[in-house]
Length: 453
Image (cartoon, rainbow, N blue to C red; front, side, top):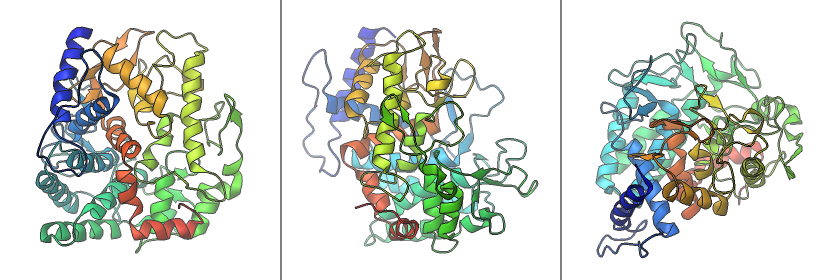
């Protein structure tokens, strides 16, 4: 795909997407937003990338469940991995993306509700363990697909991402509509069935990531912060049926206060100690996204830190690293930046400043729009107007490297999902508003000592 063809394709798609209108408006007169011949308006470009990435979870969904495929390879090469494996965490982001799709006019509300019903039908029957879902299922059967040998049971982190999506859908339902009211109740039952307290392993003041019916607690992964798992602790405190004590958060996640031991990196405070990152003061950039697709970090504070400053600085540190480009990688700069966990020339890898392989992961910059709007827009414009063959049916491919001349037409759900959702949060705050409206979430945040107004 050369640049001229790429731009022509974008123009056609943008004209279509612009005709869908804005969130909440009646679809009467449809006026294309594209007004210039050689340059897309920023608003149209945002809508375009939201439309394409939404399609990963719509047209690209696994057909039996309606949930998100773990990965989708446009080259149809799946070494030792079935394309019908579905992911719980990525599907949580996908649920939010479908709401974006409804509100942006990509699909009708009736179409979205029908998909939500299909997903809930599936989740009510699919394998779970003490109400906790596995990382992966086999799509056609709903049976657990082991993520690794001993990871063949409940995954509380991925379950929390899915639960956040379900709660957001529940809050989106209209109680005066019988179909939606029924769906709301069924989602509530799934949420109430999640045994967060089971994952304290008998009452310890920390949450454990995995439990297996075959290997019990042998994975032995106690989750301590800071990393991508804040949402798990918030939901565990919020559960109306299987809640955990505040001590689990303060002694486990916050490590008795040690989480607040920050440092300065690229001239910016890290705010919290990014635990287990060894020589790097910050983790991969998805840490600023996964918990915050629903949890609004604006004005969110507890005794340990300011979460808006935390995430904004995290994104800016990655940006500054790519601009400074200490490894002199080809292509890095103000309009081409963003490191996170993604595909790479060495397989799946956690990219960050101290583990920089010269690989750019588009989700890193695009999902950071709320924190770095100008820097993220520069990357978005570069990606869609200045590059060749980096965009497919479902938006930007997962990762690329100019340095290594490495480009693969492949997607990962966990990376595509935050893009349309975080862009919508940047534009309207829609998903943040829905998730934060859940009364249990507000009670859980209060219980843990957060302020968020």
